[in-house]
Length: 148
Image 1 (cartoon, one colour):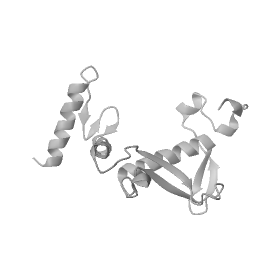
Image 2: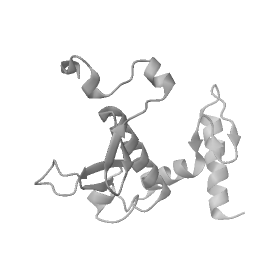
Image 3: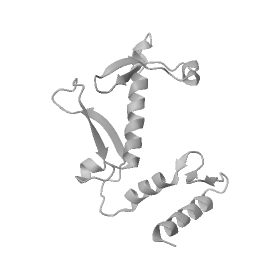
């Protein structure tokens, strides 16, 4: 058995031992509910790596030019990459998932979706029915924005 398989098996045993009342179903690399084992292991590797001093895992989509925050040009900023001054999340599947989630949250909160990324043409965001029924809508659609 390889070292990765040993670590994987150890992780699974630990999860099961530490969480008896909430039994986790492991199927096809997914730890219910919806945690992908490889992503969990990736995050745990960051926390266990003594060479990484800043353990905060985060992502932000920031203006490319800090002196012009209204610019439409944005850059991906990963932590701990920024503080460690080396690529840790950038270029990984884990980092791309963080980007996709951040981008989707921005679209939902602004109520707009980028139809064409080359021309930056925008259209109204089409909220899933189950979220729209619960009252989710764009920030600018609320009558009184002072509650935010």
